[in-house]
Structures are given as C-alpha cells and as structure tokens.
Amino acid sequence: MSAEIETWVDEHGDALYSYALSRLRNPASAEDVVQETFLAALRSQDRYTGKSSPRTWLIGILKHKIVDLIRKESREQSAEEIENMVEPEELFFDRKGHWRIKPVDWQVHPGKILEQKEFMAVLLQCLEHLPDRLHRLFVLRELEDMGSEEICKDLEITSTNLWVMLYRARMRLRGCLTENWFGGEPC
Amino acid sequence: MLTCKEVSKLVSESLEHPLPFRQRMGVRLHLMMCSMCRAYQKQTLLLRAAMRTYARHEPSEPLSEQARQRIKNALKTDGK
Ligand SMILES: [Zn+2]
Image 1 (cartoon, protein in one colour):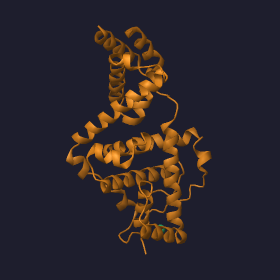
Image 2: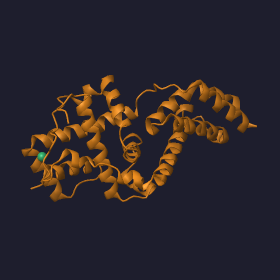
Image 3: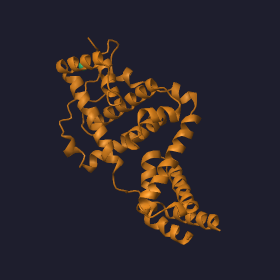
Image 4: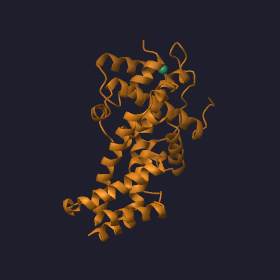
C-alpha cells in the first residue's frame, strides 16, 4: 500500500509543495510539512474512503499541518520581533491623521486585474516583504479563509489585536503594490 | 468627524466584523467627502479579491528532486 502513496508523491508532490510554499514562504518548512502530510497519509490511509480525490484529501491534511506550524511559530516568536516593527500608520499618516502618502486611484477593475500574471507576481513579492508575524495572520485570514474568532482562539490573541495586525498587513501590502505595480507617487 | 487614519482602520475592520451603527455612518459620511479614502477603500477591496484568487491559483513551484526522494525514503522507512 505504501507503493501507492509513493506514486502520490510524484502525482501530487508539486501541488502540495506550491500550496505550502505560498502559505509558509520558507522552502525548508514547506518541504517538511509536505513530508509530514505524506507520512500522515500513509498512517491513516485506511481512513481515506475515495469519496474525494486523493489531492483533495492530501490538501486537507496539509492545511492542518500548515496551521499547526503557524501556531507553533507564532508562539515561539521573539518579543524583539514585535517591538522592532515600524507601524505603517506612522508612515502613511501625519500626526493629525491626514494622509501623508496619498492613496492613488489604481484605475483598475477587479475582474480584469486578477487575470494579469504580472500583478499576481508583484503581489507575491509584496507578501514576501511582510514581517513574519503579519504574514502568518494574513495567510490564515486571507488564504486559509479562517474566521477571526478561530484565529484568535488558535493563536491566543485578542480580536482587537488581530484587527490591528490585519490592518497593518493590508496597509503595507497596498503601499507596496502602489509602489511596484501601479507606479504611484514614490514614498 | 473621523480622521482619514481612523477611517482607514475602520474600513479594514469592516472586512472582519460588522461595524457598530455610529462608526458605519461616520465612515460612510467621510467616504462621501474624501476621494483619498475612497481610493484606499477600493485598494483594500481589490487586495482581498486578489488574495482570494491567489488562494485558488494553480501550482507553479515544483518539489525538488532531493526532497521528493527524501519523502519517498521516509515513506519506505515508516511503512515497514
Ligand atoms: Zn479621508
């Protein structure tokens, strides 16, 4: 039976790895969770009923492994990392709360921009530059589509804290996109 | 009257939970009068849509041959 799982490594390895890499950013971590996923699949293959495709089943296991790892990393992060973070609201607003760097109209229609590979490539670059802590929360919320409550419970943070972090992630990403894709006013 | 900074925060928050009535009205009023915050709101919504698309995007990064072999070996050891 392990021979079948082995062929799955060839058939689904790339898909699982891409999925993991887009959530974890780090190739070594992505390879690790993919390996854990196949091992878990091997151990629990009697529970695979064949109702869903192997890929769907494997991705389901992988999602759990990714969230587990993110939870672990978020517990282990150093206090230093939190303290050293520049808050984007200080960059984008003056002391009176007026825009210091004005958001430009991107002049795009959502339906059209998303077909553009270049836009997605810039978005990926911008995601690369998010600080770890913001990236982890943003991935759980926007890629894994976890609800706020679930994330708060999982990572043991308050909802106010989560909302501020997501806000900062969004502020940074839209600033980065403006700069690198839309060629807005230089910061 | 809410400042642009406050509005930007509330616009992001409104993606997480329904805002209380007073805040919702405050944001709506501000957005009617402020084209910069309207542009910001548009960007924020576009960002969410883009992330949704990215979440479903097709695989593009291949697993390295080394990793593939390592995983197969681990499966062999574990399967015994
Ligand atoms: Zn404004």
